[in-house]
Length: 246
Image (cartoon, rainbow, N blue to C red; front, side, top):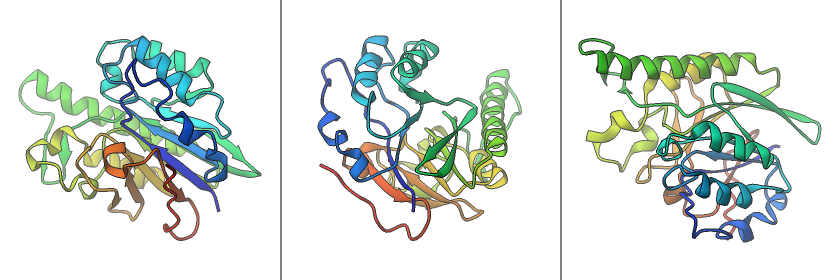
């Protein structure tokens, strides 16, 4: 059994140094790998990213992350990714990594994702250039996720995104904003690329549990949803042991 800890939307500001660290110090007792599902900062500044880097650096388990929309707000996402990388945090955007965990190989494919909506009620690449660009960006991002999953050479695969691939985990959010919370194209990529688990954030008023049309477990780990420092999911076996560290 491989234990996957995950959290997103921690939105750390410059005044949040040390907020999560006490709950992370003994992470190895509960999990083998930590996934960060984006929106790690409040406004995407490098000063906030330094707080994030210090908070999640030198943990007893590997840490893999994607950035979220908040992390792009100050237009320095590459610099943020570089800073996190310097602190030992693997940041994914259209690529994948394989982590060796006590002899078990786990592959993680990650993208931020984007909006667009869901089957039957989604945008299409038609009309104004702005609308075409919006939808084509989602198509490109979903394609990168599918390709990243395809490239993983490991028996276990995880899809890590910020935006949601399904509506299941959006229940509780206003229907009007669903197109800005995710896209069904991400779910298609996850099902076509193959994954054992999909993890996302972004939907603060959503629901934790969902499933893709192909049967892949989806978990919304936005901190306002899970209401703890992280949740733990068993990658193999029953999805029942979800630790809730203080």
